[in-house]
Image 1 (cartoon, rainbow, N blue to C red):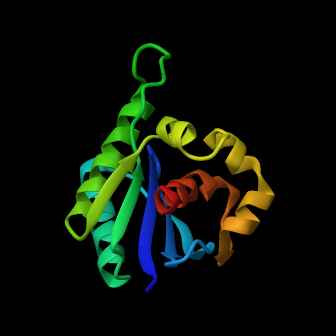
Image 2 (image 1 turned 90 degrees about the horizontal axis):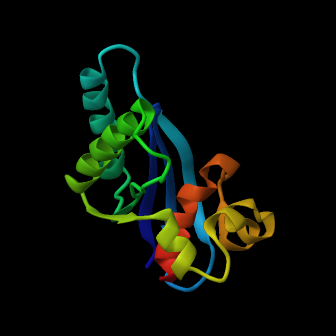
Length: 157
């Protein structure tokens, strides 16, 4: 029986989500949706409330069983900038929303690079043939490949 999973990557502007069906065999994941939830203009508190509702409702309505979120990582570039802090807030909102409905796991990009295959995430993201082999169904935007990589790594892990 296939499973429905959702991958999420947060930024200060919102969240990228990739909704997939994961087959029982080692076949490619089926992309059902690839889109963004954008933070509304104005008061961020109210915008976070809207984002929380959008995320929780989507997960509930689409019978998502598991959510994989790109985890925070230290950049090593000194002090945190406002954009990084706002992205962390968005990440917290989508994690809380998802956890109110189903199981949630956070994966660091660096961990995926170390534990999945023999290349780093960026090399997989750039490899069109990898995506042709590992996905089917709806169109997966290039900007969403890193989010989808979390799902592929979790499936194969």
